[in-house]
Amino acid sequence: MDTEVLVVGGGATGVGVARDLAMRGVDVVLAERGGLNAGTSGRSHGLLHSGARYAEHDPDGARECIRENRILKDIAGEAVRDTRGLFVQLDSDDPGFFDEKLAACRDLSIPATVYDGDDARGLVSGLPDGVERALEVPDAVIYPSRLVAATAGSARDHGARILTHTPVEGLLTTGGEVSGASTSEGEIRAEHVVNATGAWAGDLARTADIDLEMTPTKGVMVTVEYDDLDTVLNRCRPPADGDIVVPHEDTVVLGTTSVEVDDPDGDLESREEVERMRAECADLLPAVADAALDHAYWGVRPLYEPSGVAEGRGISRGFFVLDHAERDSVSGLTSVVGGKLTTYRLMAEATADHVTDLLNVDAECRTAEEELPGADDVEALDSFVREFDAGGPADVDVLST
Image 1 (spheres, rainbow, N blue to C red):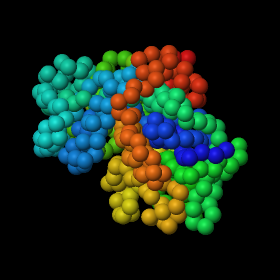
Image 2 (cartoon, rainbow, N blue to C red; image 1 turned 60 degrees about the vertical axis):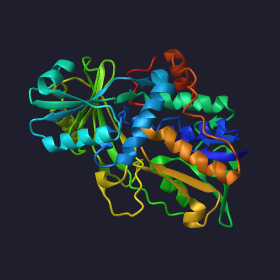
Image 3 (cartoon, helix red, strand yellow; image 1 turned 180 degrees about the vertical axis):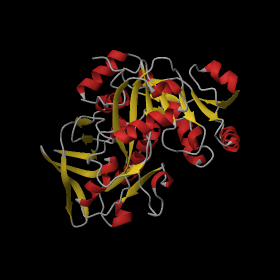
């Protein structure tokens, strides 16, 4: 099989790259080793960030989030649940941090409204007595299975070929140039390859003798039965374990941890982490301490730190588009690493900009303007999920069968 661009990886970023390139008229094949959405995207907490979480310490990242938040609410329809978010200051939290976050949100034009404790408890039932203040921001909820599947559907509508259950066994290289990949179904020859495999990016790069050192960290998400929350809750303190509660219809998702792992395919599960999430998140929403467990799952973040000096939560949540011709003297390969689900479309745009420059394709990105197919039709979205085998644990409770 021959193509102009081979995209390896069927998570949000990979399908986003395939969609963007296909919309610019590029011939694209995407190969994913399992069903779409099987990796990090489908195992996230599903929070569509407003940027408020990053406002005081990463203003550039916060600007990206609020921009993409608005775009996804426009184009993704029922793949996004437009709730709101509250950053909750408890009586044990530093009030100075709340003030700093509020000032940063206003500097970045992230809509922010302050409520005192009584008003916050009136706004969201179930909050504890220890709430001092709350900051309302435009957070929302992403259903990643629908988002990834609809993005793949759009890519296919524009001519991309989507190959699920097609593991890539290695990159094809000759004389310092990547010319495609060997897959379980045979070779795919390409003018350029995009490595969008997330936490597995280093594994794929090594097949071309490239050292791409990822720093994957695992996080647990705990889904419990609770049907009385319509707002994303964030603990208003520096990012830590157990500081997010994400509402679904009859459940809430509690998250998350950040623990470095050697192997993203290794055994990630830990009962202690599940119980710790309950205890930590119960400070925000006491009823979850005793709520029935629906399911727990672990995801692995595709973190990359160029300097190699940061650890854990100190590693940038930003994204990087790596040109391996410049970085490693290996042409024909670009890797996109890092980032977050909220900014998947922007990551894809930056990657597609780079690849089209290399291919001398003169076409602009249109993914922010064109609505995803079936966006306003739950049944249509969930039919894409079934077709691309894109169901994941992050939103299994909301998908129609």
